[in-house]
Amino acid sequence: MCGIVAYVGHREACPIIIKGLKRLEYRGYDSAGIALMNGTLSVYKKKGKVSELEAFLQDKDVHSNIGMGHTRWATHGEPNDVNAHPHFSTSKKIAIIHNGIIENYAALKTLLISKGHTFKSETDSEVFINLIEDIRENNHCTLAEAVRLALHEVVGAYAIVVLSKDDPHQLVAARKGSPLVLGIGKGEYFLASDATPIIEYTNDVVYLKDYELAVIKNGELDIRSREDVKQTPYVQRLEMALESIEKGGYEHFMLKEIFEQPRSILDSMRGRMISASNHLMMSGIREFENKFVNAERILIVACGTSWHAGLVAEYLIEDFARIPVEVEYASEFRYRNPIIRETDIVIAISQSGETADTLAAIELAKSKGATIFGICNVVGSSIARTTDAGAYTHAGPEIGVASTKAFTAQVTVLTLIAMIIGSKRGTLETSKLHGLMAELENIPAKVERALKLDQQIQEIAEKFKNATNFIYLGRGYNYPVALEGALKLKEISYIHAEGYPAAEMKHGPIALIDEQMPVVVIATKDGSYEKIVSNIQEVRARKGKVIAIVTEGDTTIPAMSDFVIEIPETSEHLAPLLSVIPLQLLSYHIAVLRGCNVDQPRNLAKSVTVE
Ligand code: G6P
Image (cartoon, rainbow, N blue to C red):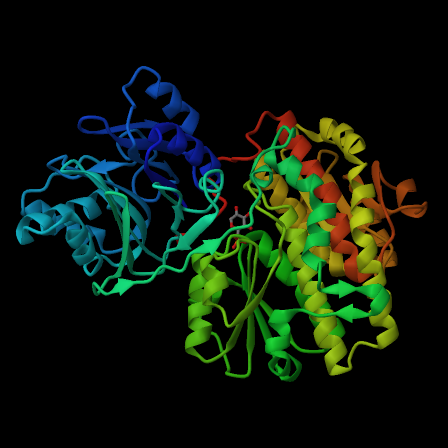
């Protein structure tokens, strides 16, 4: 959580930093601040969005060629001006921006107070900067040296940038557990939590590694380990188009990302499957093919929407490859003494590749000798770099906090994986495999058709915008979709919603159903169609309002539903890729009609880098 940006070079730093912070607002948006070197070291900060900071800066002298900014998602201390970053040290000679959590901050703070340091905020970050100041004063050393020594004292996660009044042309940065990308331009350098604030200016980037320290001074870059050993930076050329991180005429990033799905699903299969030539290949899997084929068990760890994609994968892999699969919330997995064997394959799914709980679950599985396979969207992210092998989803940057295109891309990649393992193990018949490949190739066009339902869904949203509760029901492959639909609605419209396996409804949620209760039932034509018809009858008998997602041409369910959304027919194994589309649109339109901030819902952050 939290986004950081810093700049040093020949341009005005302030506009670069403000624009960069806006791009990083998906990481947190409860307060923002900036530090600039304008004769002295000045810090300006404000509770609220980056735009509020921008307005606050209107009448300030912001001329500077060096600076750093931060957009916050509160961990220690409520969101207010004081707790916003940057934070000064007691002497106000140095300032810090920090993304992460310092776990031993309380002990360090007590020690620092006893040495005369004073604190204005409740943050762990202010402790970090005072620790650096304390080390600098006691050791009479450079700022860079003090930061390096401080890294030995702090426990937890951090990406930091430090500015000093005494070194007006220097930025010092370090990371452990939180991402930090360094952009290298012509005579200028950028630092940011991800590459989006940078790519407008340069495509050459270095992903800092854990415990690395970068010092940019007088136009020179020096990267060292925490043990002070000089490192040779690996400069990567990023192929990210600027348009992919802009709204492109859509009102919200979420809507743009929903509408991008025909393309993003195609991109996630590109080069991996061509049904006409029966080509099915994934380089990450090929490397570990024997392990996959012989695996006795597959564990899937993930959080949020990625966990829902994992549930779809459980059904696919067990069906096609006949390997037992367990899907775990990463946060539970790591704290419950799970059984992990060397023969297990752990698939970690994460859009951002930075989710702290998923990273920790990977570390635990690694320590037990399991093989780790990552499915990430963000190229170069921490999870992508820590796994033994993996596959990128290639959905392109997802900026809306509520995940949409990343989900369908994850499901597409997982479907390919299940098909590959199934075919290698001989558990998936060739004719069935070829049929599935041909149908998967049709999915982008069918998603395109499902997107045409937008207007109709908007009208349904109008009817239910004031509901206080929703129930989502699905069976089989559509059960994870019911969970995902409910999550989308909760996240962005703040309406309470429950997703349930349809048959389980009668063991509890049925008690909630009355004439006020909208029940979204995903009832496409599949193996459990007859059963779900009965579930709809159970809802109707209690006067619930049925919004049914059905297969085009169905006449039975429309006759018993209040509202019907018809989606194209497909194989039940691929149904989630289509049935989720109307649910994304429904939550989007309800949230817009309720006046909610769709791209930046309250209390949430896109990348949860704290436990
Ligand atoms: C946050 C986001 C969700 C996301 C989850 C897991 O809660 O708001 O949209 O599904 O984290 O994130 P990951 O990046 O690991 O997929």
